[in-house]
Image (tube, rainbow, N blue to C red; front, side):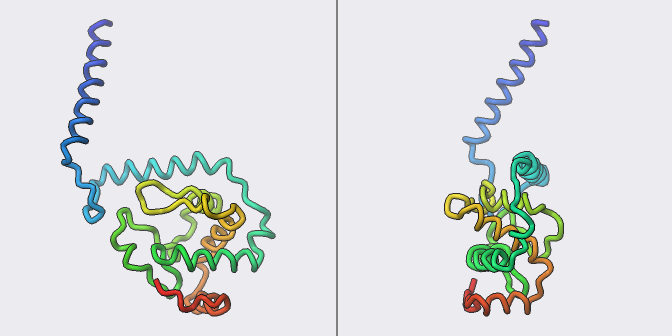
Length: 178
């Protein structure tokens, strides 16, 4: 038993030392322009998905009548059009150049079907995601505003380019260039 325990401790210490040496060696390329190895992409994606799944259980959305209210959708559109289009695009509006330089690349939310639930969208918008460029809007926006953004994001795949332009014109934000 002593030999087994000392072997486990030795392997653990060598692993920690190897990790520290790797970190300080500078061998890992942190450039956003370089692609991560497939195993690292899998680790990061799985970690992100499981983390969100675990935390979203406590999120309680407002009533459907609030989420479907035209004023809520309009408010969500205004925030989305101002803050999100540059990375996530919109119907008839390409994402900006910044999106091309992000790694991982932000999802195009116009193409998103049922990938994220309403509660997941709320959580991501409120808390952001580390090392992705997705900011946390919770420190600067109330939950009501974040719910409005989430409600709008869930409607994006249903909107046409003409629908989106009409919303821009209605709110006076048609000249918002990204």
